[in-house]
Length: 128
Image 1 (tube, rainbow, N blue to C red):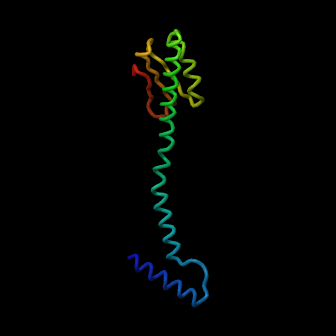
Image 2: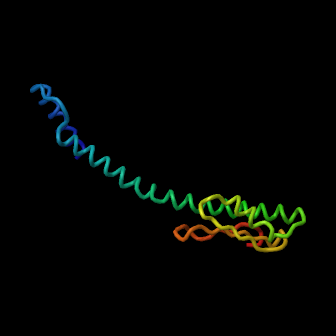
């Protein structure tokens, strides 16, 4: 099959050189369109999943930041209930809500939830 296409293209090129034609033949254009179609078919699912992965990673980071803020607060002698505001401040402006539970570092668990269209909540901390 490959050899047939190669022979056809070579014959078409010789004919064009003899007749003085310029441009691409129909078969060359069809081959290019098929190759582009294959590349697009491969790329669309990959790009469609990028946003979901980014949202999951944002939730993981927010939960980790909340757990770190709560652990720092507990280590300084304050209770874990003081830290949700610090955890929420570290979550950003994407509508992520961080809740912290546990009163000691061993029972600490920070849960980050996003808007309804985002993936499931992510947890971080030794008590989760």
